Length: 129
Length: 390
View 1 (tube, chains in turn orange, blue):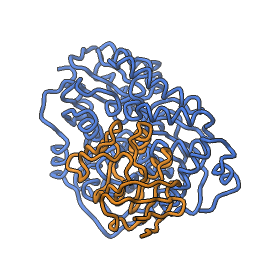
View 2: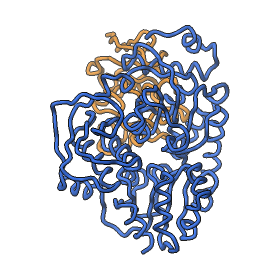
View 3: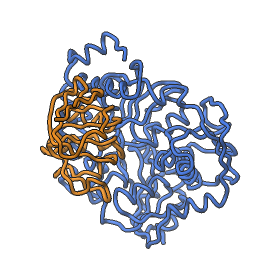
View 4: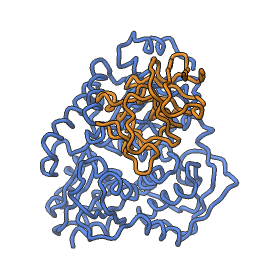
């Protein structure tokens, strides 16, 4: 199945979907050294986002979160791709400076945790096997 | 989005890598928020300067941008993680200082004025009414929009840097007149006496109205220092980066139908919410950074006395230099209080060094709790000085 959305940051990637129903605050919410979600009570708390097709509605929190994505990338702990419902400034800027393929305006409810997702951000699409 | 020939060249990488990356950021933001075009900016304030927040990766990003990126408009910086000259006296570790200096060097290489302050409007970066600018630092953004009448969204570090390098920003949000209009009237039934009242007002509006733009009525007078306090508190507690006060702020706005009233009891409750119990071991003034007038008042309060608690006064370095010249610094330093220029308690690595902080800043209460895990107490400047002397 092909889900059509919009390009935020160009690039192709594929990865196992890690789906969050809640927004993600990268600054303070994700450990930049391990890629593990540390926000208390978050539905991904304790899970590692490294190498995943990270699916969540949108970013939240401090604008420093863009640099957290960059730190994750440099530490080899960044997600392979980001799929949002509605992208906002923090994630958009973070994806661009970190060169993480990113699309939004995707019907993220259709993506199940653990399925393999292929992203072609230039075309704004996410493909589920 | 429509781009000019020059903008297209930057996006294609013909003006260097930093300009290309910058243009990618601005175009992506413009697309997300439905901007029709980019517009020139006359002033930039870059946030994300403290090494405590940037880490090695952030530093690496800035060094990469500094290879061929140069600021095209007047650009200043937000506070760093330490006083760039006096860091030893303030107990900052050597390795942190080394990395923080590398961050500043990268900005300097890009032709950015390395005055690290959250009050650029006190040190020469004071845009004219109606001008488009690109600022980070929510208190400065709110002051610029509301008090100076300039136009800016709340930028993050990379997007403001992108504006500095390209000289442009995407036209959306608070750059457009329709988004700057008041959406609810806030009628005051209680007189605002000091800076903590203005801070509590920002807290209350943020909590009650969320992101809707307020038109505040019933304020007889407000000093620039008091408006600075309101500008800092409003976005900190969930409010928008612009406000209007009838008869005081320069922007024109319509009068919306929706109205809330705030009275004495609301202000008392707000102050209760921002206060923690505890034994004060650190007193802090200058969040946002002190004006020269505030330093003059602190000097008068400390003249001939000795402080018994750790007491920091945060200010932009040029303002501190002015205080030196005018003779205000001497009584403060002789009393044992310390100036912390270029930095503040929200971005310096102070966790564990203090337990309970007294300040006159409602914004400071939020970030003292959040960034450094302090217990916080909100009092007037005079009460803060008295506490330091106890």
